[in-house]
Amino acid sequence: MSHGHSHRAAGDVDEQVEVGGRARNSLLVALALAALATVIGLVVWWPSGDASEVEAAQFAAEGVTFPAGEVRDVGEPCPVQEAPPEGCGRVTVEVDDRRVDVQVPPEVFAAGLSPGDTVELQKIPAAEGGGGPTYSYFATDRDGTLLWLVLLFLVVVLTIARWRGLFAIIGLTFGAAVVWWFLLPALLEGSSGVGVALTGASAIMFVVLYMTHGLSLRTSTALAGTLVGVAITGFLGVVAVADARLTGISDDAGGLLRAYGDGLDFPSLLGCALVIAGLGVLNDVTITQASAVWELRAASPHASRREVYAGAMRIGRDHIASTIYTIVFAYVGTALLVLLLLSIYDRSIVDLRSTEQLAEEIVRTLVTSIGLVLAVPATTALGVLVASPRRAAVAVAESGG
Image (tube, rainbow, N blue to C red; front, side, top):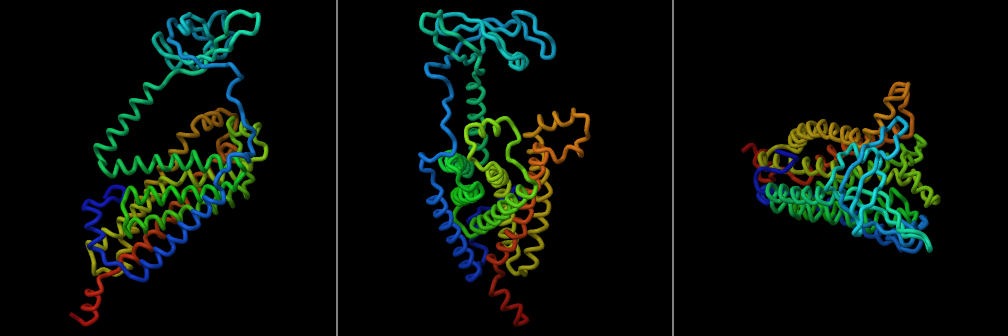
């Protein structure tokens, strides 16, 4: 099995597995209560749009525009750590039917800017009685690269995963909509970070799991395990952030946001980030465990619950090990520049473990990993309770047949 998806059709597995009535009803009631709590959370914390804790920030001054132009000539880059010679770091751009020279940061040159590339400039209109408008470099146009990557992603997913891939993409789109239209505005209005995160994560998982994997008790078991893992991650996140006295501001983005919204609770925002960060990998693990239980039960309908649990946990332990590597290296990748900066200080990385940047990444990794690991036995236990042994087989065994 790969990531918990069975080799036979999911519907066949669900039909072969006998389900315990009491466990099934308890599972469905619990999910119904979770869905009700999610709806209540959406109603309570739905952003009103007029009570933001963050002062509205205008991206640019009035009259400033951002025209696109084509690079015609590239000058010499300026040295990073030396006094720059006159005229270095400039490119000639054709924009608005004219050619203008603009200063470009050294890192843009290092990225390989060349004639024919498209760049976005910031155009400041001329003052009354002054000369022409002023142009400055703003960004390099990357639409072409982003477009072919998106198209390649869609082709690969739809070709290999087919309908499952399509449903996964739809679910991903729904998740992005929840983050953009609910989670971010609610946070900017000063709502509880962890409360908003739990509500948004629950809403996303209800739609994504059922849409991608179908309406079945197997999917419901995975959903219940995911919600357990999300709740554990949220609780541990609140405790760890408070106990470590983390500020939630570890980079320039946090500092800039604080300048616009001093009323925001940044430790609470960090708790929200911990929940959302572990959502995808948590979902993967719980689906694996639910599918493992159903596959084992379908293959061994007469096995005891203990035997199925033990077999599924052997699969789960392997998946836990590989997923923890995934989490750790994913965070190393995102925090690579921070780690590089810390590594050049005249202190060991162990001595710097309590700095805001490093401690935040350590807490993020450990909290999401603990929630992930505990979700495995929880999902497995729920699965073996719902996917019960064949009653006819049990009766025959008890009669000595």
